[in-house]
Image (cartoon, rainbow, N blue to C red):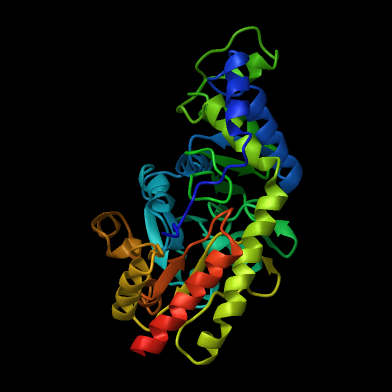
Length: 378
């Protein structure tokens, strides 16, 4: 069976975890946490990068820093993971869902302005599949209406928009290091902060509302509870696992992009015949090979294809169920405008195997099985 995903590993993870244990500093903000944070800052140019226990928690921290309050509205796509909305629902805010673009599955930037009200506090673009939203337009609207931009860049590390790394364009950016992502620490994430004015408050929130970070830097002689916060600091063991991959970040990225390009080349004839759809990378966007998806004719064809590929030893999966159709989405949020594409396109999308270590011959086999499917059934 060709797995849909295999968590990334370079071979040094256990050595680094062992080193963290030897150093007797495993609770976080030790050598490996600091290395990872510094690496992120140097490679993205952000003012501060703070490792977190998940991308969910990075987004929660962004909501706290943005002072999201009950009754506020936050504009986002419905085609995203629940964490995008949860972070703001926990603050009492209302997710306002806007339709997506069918070519990128990203928030349709042309529909955002009509969804802005006097209660709107932030726009949350989600960079689906590591392909950027139209950030110039989004940031322009944010500036016009005095809104914050919180990038859900869970899938976007090592990708960019017009030369700017995803996660660094808005006020805050949120990365995921879940085992399904290009770089992993099992469960984990990072908050990227553009404006240095937010750094001290972010450190306090991350350390349970204390000024513990200043204490460890020797800036104060004792630390205490100074504000509301939570426990968003990951274990040093997780950071050690991640560091093994950041050391080889370029190699991992190149591998994934190579497999992405191979899929595109092999499947282009099926697209030309109108049998399936393929991803589009707009001009100015550099992707990271986070995923490779195709689009079938409809949900019925997708279901048939999933079963067929499974029988041939290929694990392919669909993705998000639109949040506005979910019980919690109906209770906590609302959809602005017409759902022309969100549901329709989500029901067509099928993700093919993609991970660091996926071999060329495996990609060729997956493509061959797709040709067999369309030859036999269509």
